[in-house]
Image (cartoon, rainbow, N blue to C red):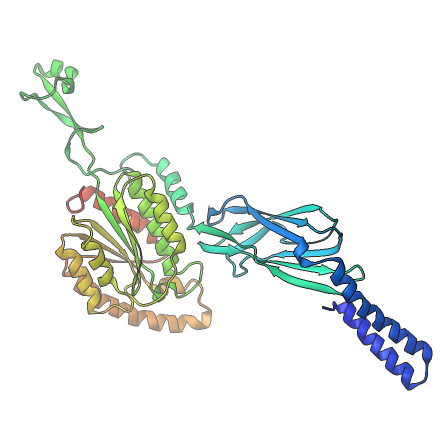
Length: 441
């Protein structure tokens, strides 16, 4: 194909040839023929000298899994396998340009000359900005002849899969804050109080026949003049099942800060908090169908199983909470704490029946609901705020009716905004941990 310079050359040649013929000016006519000849001869010469198959290209990344805001170092290795040098080679490495990545250092393109058998490498650094599963590529390659008149372009099917986990910043922030708080405060460790074998001191009582001698508190015995036993508080673990609504209503608003993204971050925070305390944690992602299901466990690999799912969640379809709860209660034979993250939009009688089904199996239900207008107001323009306010009043009235119905089943539906979403999730979990009762393992 002709480059811009090549097109100018051909057009100029046609112009001079026509002008010379019209005015019987042989010099112009010869100049025009010469220009056209150069363009015509350049093409077969270029095709015979260098071929696209001589280009070998490979992409290397320092990690194929990362968290949001991590840095990815990408290297592109170019090799000329042919026996002739390439006068001009341009390589453009393609990555998603929808705001999911930000180019931090270097360039994802290079223009250079490559000698026969030579290998060149260029690199650049991207910062991940949005969770998800991505494909880096393809690589666009352009070859040009020495004169710059002819070029050949091709996309090489060189793809690399990259999985980006949700941001871990919320977990880091919680850990940092917890380290500055004494044990037992908001972000501290809470136990279900029950006497037994453990590490947390519970109290002292009189010795009873059959008690283990190693549990005798000799100092207390000396003070009271009779044998006293030291008792400890045993920690009971609970079973937590997270229901994540991934219906289309959850993705309204900003791509980066909608209800689904906040719910995913809340699910990650909740699962991390519970797994640190050795609770059993499971996850189900649903819309009008079941997308993912992870059985509750407390193993070390459970965190990564949950992260893999949360990274791949995409919002689509309508809601079917009843189907999700029905699926879970048929597989979990014991009661659990159901943490349901849903906006309660598109709700119907099936929604109430779903809550009733969960309660009928003696599960404790904690329904945390992001209220849409709170999230959409962050990105709404001034002219849209009045419309948003009118919509929010209608939604709030409908939600209030559902909350009353749900309240009759001894379930509290909690409205949250971007500011109090994560603190409220942590608070509800810690209260469930202290309460015990249903969901004990």
